[in-house]
Length: 436
Image (cartoon, rainbow, N blue to C red):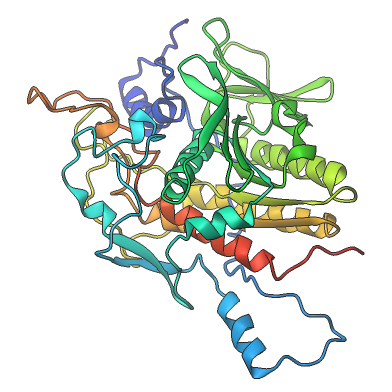
């Protein structure tokens, strides 16, 4: 890999502190990193999304009789903005731990790796308008009986899937029936719950669209923005629910293709391409993905349900290889931090594209955003940090240790994503797909 000339001291230090953490943890366990300049959207002044409240409720025909009092109460129970709330103390703790779940990836197994400050497990998310019920594994399994759930995306999709498997395993043990190991990661895996004939799969697709990932011979990702990634899309007819999660890999050097042309690139020194921001590229990739789902499943077959888990911020403070890279031990209060900058813009694009796709795919397609950006933003305490490694301070040397302030400990805050996912699925039971 060639070196990049960044020996202007001030510029080098700024770039290293700002983007090296992203490159490190987004590409784990890849062991080579790039100090990158930050090149966001060419339109940074776009207003924040006005879609702050996402409401789920039962569909009622305009010609139907007015609901009874009991029916009205039931409808009100399902009408809740799950994404507007705060983290509150909860002594109950998680459903599982490092000994009861056998599918926790080593880098997320914070307790086994020696993390002793377990206060991060004593919080629950409390929406303002309602209570978020504790996860019910048997209810989830009943909802996916005879169905196939596919998690598609980057390592954050895998992190959420690992959480779900651990929660479901408290009621029924998942059986690994397929894995395709690429490098150090099981990037394509499938689990089966025989008692429910339910299947949950993982599809590695960090861009959702077709992409050729960077390598030792090419430092740039190559994204083909008008072609969905067929590694997962070709199985769409066998999927009943797709959970998408992506975004972090768009911060990495890349060349962007559309049709037979190169649109530009994100940080590609030495190449004769126009430098463009990754915000519009993220939007194009998501639009191609949704259009492909609508075209293939929106008007035929049994339909499909789609959830997009929104972008989750990192919590690096200082240098990635110092012991205190993400040192917080409690959640932020709402008034302490405001969602802004890149995190807010990434979320805004995702919310907008979900709403546009919903308008296109009314028939046989249910699509919602699992809008966890704020929930995640308020939890700087929930990352593995140095405990991505076993016993990182066993020799008392804390000067240099690799940290992960992007992914989430298991158990940890990410379990809440799946609690909300279950509530969305339960509400969908009262919202049959349109046949119009």
